[in-house]
Length: 390
Image (cartoon, rainbow, N blue to C red; front, side):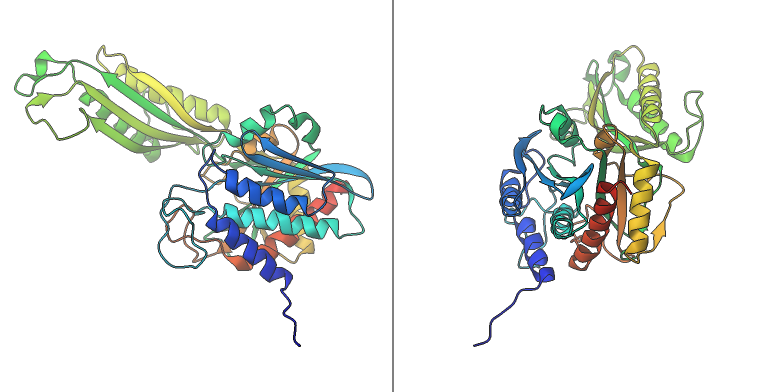
């Protein structure tokens, strides 16, 4: 009688699909964490930690000889993006889906660990971290604030993110800033409403809103704003604006309430602080006596790669036969792995997902399963070298 044999590639693809079906939002990754913890437990770790910084999971594995502690990190959370009908492994929650590839990242880290544990050259200590709430920027902060982080804290940390628009399997990594710092800024006004026929008798925030939106546009165009020339890498994206109360438009009213929401980005943390300060100053100066209220959201530190960790990644790519590229500037979108890189030398590695692959956070995006063995091989090679001190 013939027996069916499932290849390693098929096993990892099946796991990726299972994780895809279990997609959960930031801070609510209990089901995903359970799947990961079950798989890690079967791998025989020396220690298994759950509930890190929320639903985070970490496992420790000891090598056969002394060496360094190396951490491989993946993300647990998904996005509030509806998934179109299509693959049989689509998300069980129609309003939540893995449209950033975190399901693939988790799978690659687990597959890489299997390779490391099976290598006779495994030295030191391997830590696998499956981090919650990356999409909001809160997850890494929660993990390092957990008392157990003192035990887990490695000598080197590596993470990998797939990059649509880049040739399949190309490794993108640079020393210094790799991903931009970013933060959401909400500016809200509360003035005095009046009849639309006598706007001069009220205090509307309309002019201040227009000035702030204009400042964001000017920053992106490279214009001098508020006497300040924008720094290289500054970006201010208006993501929301509302004048007046929610509901039907009252054409007989000059409204009192208004708000503008902007996502600010910069190459460095200091640059982000400077940009946020400029936007706030413009809002205050344009408010005509109204006092705007500012709130910040989803703060991400810049992810700054350590040169030695980058060297490990690039050498691993060479050993795996993968092309490499050092971009001239940081990648615009943010990653909270920067918090981990402040704790120890680390590197975020970009891995091409295909030139024509749909972009991240798009409803059309799905992680390419063909990338699993490529990323797993790269991470395993890098981890083995880093653990051995290479």
